[in-house]
Length: 375
Ligand SMILES: [Zn+2]
Image 1 (tube, rainbow, N blue to C red):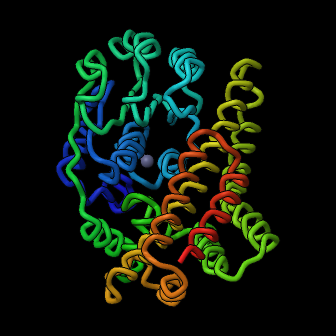
Image 2 (cartoon, rainbow, N blue to C red):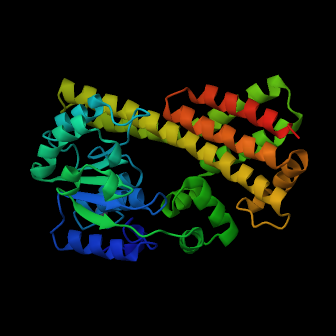
Image 3 (cartoon, rainbow, N blue to C red):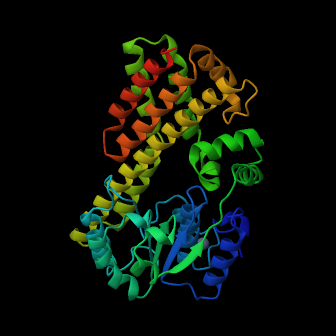
């Protein structure tokens, strides 16, 4: 067997019970066809979903090293489908329809298929009903992994058809330690990575991606510059931020094109069109998650500024940019930092509402500039 460290399941070391439970289920060949992962944001549900998908599709229970495992780890496996609500109010009917149309189709590369359905509490009753039948009797070799915060907010008919897996809350310190063990980087840097990326696994990926770290750096610099920025500066900062956020997408795009090329000969035109549509959506989703990560960088930075204003010796998350935090704290006051945080929250809502990233970032930077000067 290949080294266990390489598999995503083995890396779930902040959720040992979940890790052991899922590892046993796959190894014994008794994996359920529908799981419901339940827990607070940051507990690592999405990481666990990708890990389970990897183990389920791999011919060796998730070796972490084969072609299939590598593709799942890079989120480029054509048989793992990730869904997240595409409108501010929940899943679109078109999304559920596409999913249900896809379920009976044969897998493209693997022997099985996995559907990860994030924020499953946002499945509306009308779309959920269509899904229920499939959840009850999915075709052979199909696994559903639904993610939700708590069973109370989910449709009971969905909960009863899934095997529920509770995730425990992971403290930022425990998460940072896990990232530090995996990357060998110091705790302060790992704590920042978890705060910006949102979970230990994404924190590890963040620390491995020069492009994602650059996007964060650009965000920090943009906000740092706002104290003295004129209108043209703000617009040009927003522009380079968007370029930085989009940089990691180039690799995804080229992988997608390769998969399309490889499958062009034996897929029907309808199936090809579906793959192209899915690729487009995946790129969109990735761009949005890149923007959300950049916004998380802004949020943690402004929270550090607020903390520092309240207590000069405060324990900040963005240890590496203490000078920026100090400059911003000196330029504003508690009311200003609070308003700046509100501007970040507004930008997050705007992205969720499909406002273009460029516009959302521009508006946010102008609002933060205004907020900082309100002392
Ligand atoms: Zn494998």
